[in-house]
Amino acid sequence: MTDYAAEAARLRVECEQLRAECELLRVEAARVGALDRQLRALLALAEAERDRLRAFKNAVERSKPWRAIQALRGFVGRRW
Image (tube, rainbow, N blue to C red):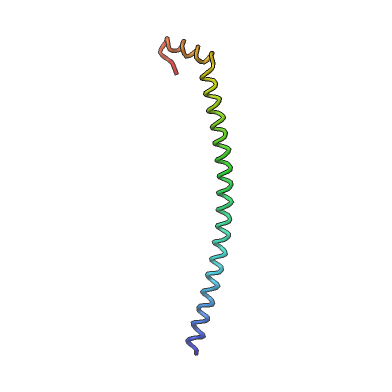
């Protein structure tokens, strides 16, 4: 009976350690999930800004003054 009691006590301690570890992992998973959501939001903002700047660049390059300047720059070999 003593071996059984010792094994039961060891298993209770191990169970408590695993519960504590599980709780720590849940807290860490929640923290990482929050960080993931924050980073995804920042990425969405950066991608929106990239798209806005790309559209602006394309509008500038399609403008008549830009094309005229590029034609003039082409004469001196400095076209962009």
